[in-house]
Length: 164
Image (cartoon, rainbow, N blue to C red; front, side, top):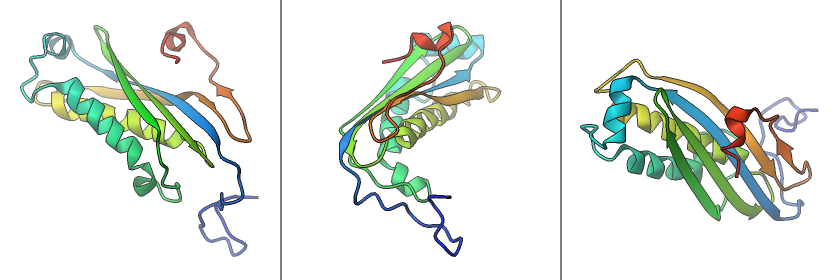
């Protein structure tokens, strides 16, 4: 049975009215591959458009808050906390988003949207230097709360250090 389809097979929003509220948390992960030139400019905060990480952090937070407006059938949620973090490496920037809410439905989509919007903002802020950047894996690292409980991606050493 598909939860987002009614008896006639038409899209519908899932009714979460009867579900109990619980603490919901999710952490998402994403990367953007960068050139040595972009790395140097980011490291020295010399990208021509300005403070890249400040802009991307705000964009990621705003994206998480607007997920219900961007993704069809997502519930608009009241978020308690959104944190967007960056780790600059020689060939990439790793972005993580942590989202927390007390509610009736999970915050996985908000975390994934926050990471995605932050990555797109990084690209936008740096594209005057290098249009060849590549946004690669974006995925859920961990979630907790609700009926399905805890999900934790099978960790590799690579992603384990980004868990909250």
